[in-house]
Each structure stands twice: as structure tokens, then as C-alpha cells.
Image (cartoon, rainbow, N blue to C red; front, side, top):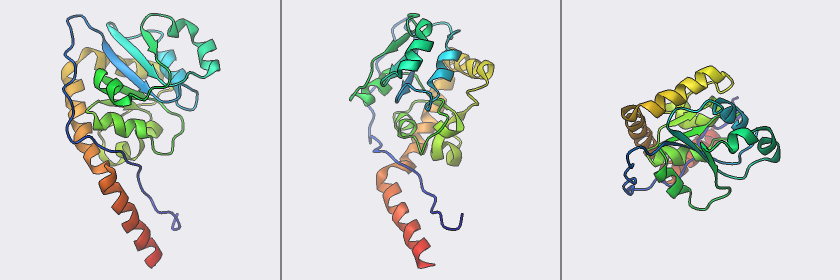
Length: 199
């Protein structure tokens, strides 16, 4: 441990966010998953929980779907409450059109998808791995055990049903993300490295 230099990942935090599109009456609450739709990212746990989706909610998958996931969860993927767009270069647009981000990863380095979602004022539901350092250091990410399908589903239901909760948690996430802009993370990395080498 004394040979490790702890540091976070980062993102380019937008200085000003465009207005979110107004939700039309009856429009579903959109949960977004950004990343490879694979076992490593816990997509199977999310889709298992989504077998009973929150009423009036929609799940948007932004990333390529692993063939095993496609085969195992075809019923969920084709249920009408899920849309899969594959790889997209318009991640910012997807985040601005969403209401909640979800990342139930089993293993991560430090997930940029979480930083990006937070920087776009989205509340984030994530595993400990999916929460990354921003979750561990700030407490603004709602950390769940995605293998507890009942608790995971309950959390999805809570966010789907409560606009005030979504707005409050998104505001906290946005404020915390400012500390993880590369303009701050980069110099902090160098400072930590120089302090380490100076020993």
C-alpha cells in the first residue's frame, strides 16, 4: 500500500448545461446505462431487476450488447420498456434526455460514465465499483448491492416515483463533479506523484 498513489479519474465538466427537454405529460422516466452492455458492467443484474420495471419507466442502453446478454435477456430487451441504441458518440445528448443513470458494475477502474452522468446533473444509482471515487469520496452516488435484486428494484422504483428526489440527487452530483474536472484532477495527480517521489 505504501507504494501506491491513490488518484481519481476525471471528466471535462460542462461549464453550463443546456436546458433539459421538458417532459410531456405521461412521458416515461428514463433510466440510462452507458457502457458495454456486458457482465463486467453488471448489465445482467440490471436487466434481471428490470423484469419488473417501475411503472411508467423506460431503460435506455447506450453501448454494444454482449451476445450472451442478448440471448439470456431477449424477453426484457424486447419488452417495450427497453431501447438499445448501440455505440453512440452523442453521450451528452443521451444524458440530457435521461432522468437517472444506472451503473451496477462488478468491476471497474474508475468509471468515466459515472463522472459524466454526475457532471450532467443526473442522479446515479451504482454498485460500489460503478460509483468509483466520486461515490466513495463524496457520498453523492446512491450505492447499492446490485446482486440484491429486491433492493435494487426498490431503489429503481423510488427514483421513478419521485421527481424531487431525482432533482435533489442530480444537483448534488453536479456540484460534486466540479471537483473531478480534469483541470483539477490533472494537477492533483502531479502533486501526489511529486510528493510520493520526494519521499
